[in-house]
Amino acid sequence: MARLVIMGGGVAGHTAASFARKWLGKEHEVVVVTPNSQWNWIPSNIWVGVGGMKKKEVIFPLAPVYKKVGIDYRQAKAVSINPEGKDGSDDAFITIEYTGQDKEGQSEELTYDYLINSTGPKLNFGATEGLGIGTEMGTHTVSVCTADHAEHANHELQACIAKMRAGERQTFLIGTGHGMCTCQGAAFEYIFNIEHTLKAEGVRDMADIIFITNESFLGDFGMGGIHFSMGGYATSSKVFAESLYAERGMDWILGAHVNKVEEGKVTYESLDGEIDEQEFDFAMLIPPFAGVGIKAYAKDGSDITDTIFAPNGFMKVDANYNAGAYENWKPSDWPRTLQNQDYKNIFAAGIAFAPPHTISKPMSSPNGTPINPTPPRTGMPSAMMGKAVAGSICDMIKGAPEPTHTASMAEMGAACVASAGKGLFSGTAAAMTVYPIIPDFEKYPGTGRDLNGTTGELGLAAHWIKHILHFGFLWKAKLKPGWTLIPE
Image (cartoon, rainbow, N blue to C red):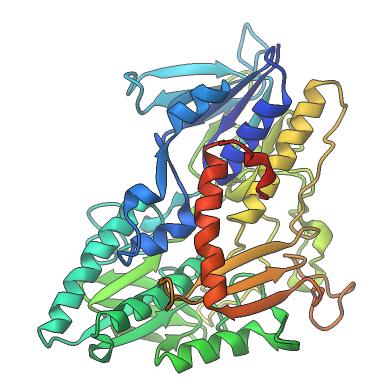
């Protein structure tokens, strides 16, 4: 009997566990270790953050789903890995600390034959002074990174709307809270849903709405920007994004590293090295991501965390981490199998793997402060990685000598539907496809991507698609009949 242990139950981990359980016979074990009791469809958190959905509509309990299909579920967090076992035993194991299931606070050593790290990110609020003071959600800013955060954000939003109805003008600051943030797309969706909600509430004229971002131009999205086919014409994400912000009367601050948040004010450094301030009444600033802080130990007890994990805490895989200067970067730098090169029975998927470098061109201020987006790898790419890694491990358990499936972001496309406002007849969204995610300027000169596979459409129909996808992916995640027919 082989035991596959999956650390993390988000998009990548849940996908890997679901397919592994389907593909492996009953003689093999699939174990999921995650501190969360609820599964969250994160793309819909932005709707919870404006009151368009309730928290209960974007989450569901994991335990009944895993019990139904025979997955061993441990509500716990992984704190360390011993890939060589320890003195007296060669059995590899992870140490977990329970966060629920009537075992809260207890520790356990859980052995494994294969291990998938899909822990996702640590929301690193502490990287920016004042971002998240007091609680994880913060007293000065809000977040939509979790369902609880989004519910809190909507509470604060409704308070602002009440003030505007009373004649008090409000300034909304939405964007990234650090120079090395990712998830510009979530901030993009949220600011447009804020604008749409204020308009629907009849108070738009009482609001100033500002987007603050570490992108050097609007529409970078951490992918170096996109050229895509839209309405039969080639256009850039820069032109597309700028037009959307301008026609909705929103301002923007580019190339900004927020280095301090105080009550009603952020201080930020720009790419030109200048230090400036921006006041706000409501601020939703995405925090930077880091690895969750898992340690690793050799058989003799020595610390080998730096061998398995990059300095940012994400796990090293089959990527080229010595690519050097931006001019030397190639699509082949990106991992294909997501297998750790020191320990062949360990894989990482989704946000948990360490990228070889950014996708966008690295930039810094004259003061040496890095200010550029880090690579997005959420949603569809995470699910595709989870499925591929599960496929490789299942084949290896059955005798394959090496990974049999690949999921390189340089070889895969992705689809995204970005909401610009929720409503059955008034909703709007941008439906975009990108192929490949990592641009390849040798294969696709000029644009870096295949325009036949890189498209964009804006309108009500795209909103309906996003709404349908919400229910479709929750159905899939609950492993209901036909779940495998819904694509990742």
